[in-house]
Amino acid sequence: MQMKNEQSTKKAKKRTILQAEHTSVAFGGFYAINDFSIEIMEGELHFLIGPNGAGKTTFLDVVCGKTKQSQGTLMFKEKHDLTKLKEFEIVREGIGRKFQAPSVFPNLTVWENLELSMKQDKRLFSILKAKSTKEERAQITEMLELIGLLPHKDEMARLLSHGQKQWLEIGMVMMQKPDLLMLDEPIAGMTEEEEEKTGELLLKLKEQCAIIVVEHDMEFVRKYSEKVTVMHEGQLLCDGPMEIVQANERVMEVYLGRKGEAKDVATTTA
Ligand SMILES: Nc1ncnc2c1ncn2[C@@H]1O[C@H](COP(=O)(O)OP(=O)(O)OP(=O)(O)O)[C@@H](O)[C@H]1O
Image (cartoon, rainbow, N blue to C red; front, side):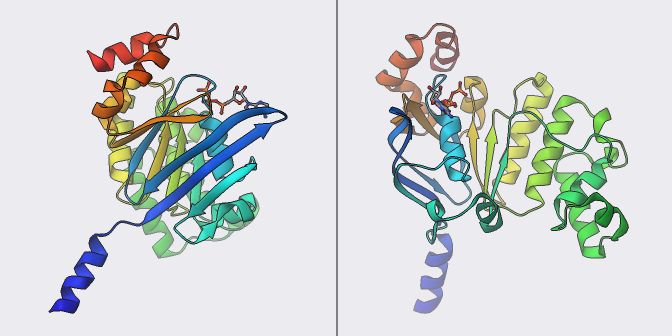
């Protein structure tokens, strides 16, 4: 009986998916990130916000190995030291990233795009020649349902709307079953309806992996965030649930002190 209790406690305890401590990144003598720390837990939809130039994209670059940090520790799933891995090894360990602009294969169908993303051998010829297994086809269908593109499965990707292309690309990253998904401004350029569908999609995806979203749209952050980290000038300014973050005086100062972004915070703090 006691063992059973221990097991259920173990089950309930969430893993730390990503832990960065005292991360710094220097470009020449300039610190784009300066002693920044963040912890991302399993099943978390975590928004990373901050004014332009705060260091958000640089941080994602560090996590996926594109940029090397000059200082700090960076652990993935409590056991992989990301600073020692190359970009392809980081992907293989389970970190998927989607950049802001959609980059699907325009002249392949939606189905083929997903099929391509799940194969190791990325040569087009091999993919079109090799038939997917029943299990793989079931996985593709499941993903199409999740991203809402099942009715469009035979359409050329170039014919999709901007929002649909973004969902397809998210689906392509998800086909590799990441434990951490990183998205850079996923709703940029979307219609209101597409924004809402994206928010709903993120809520579903967090059942499968932890998610970091870099976002400028404060209304979207307020609506869908569980946890928010605010960066400013390469440093951690504040973190916690959105109610805490938007009531933080330093956060207000940083945003209100910058023309154009005052509107964003005013909307969320009203
Ligand atoms: N390769 C680089 N060389 C020199 N400076 C860089 C480089 N990459 C980024 N920076 C600088 O580092 C700082 C942080 O940039 P970063 O793109 O990470 O900010 P951000 O928070 O993502 O901004 P935005 O919201 O505008 O995308 C900026 O001052 C930027 O000019």
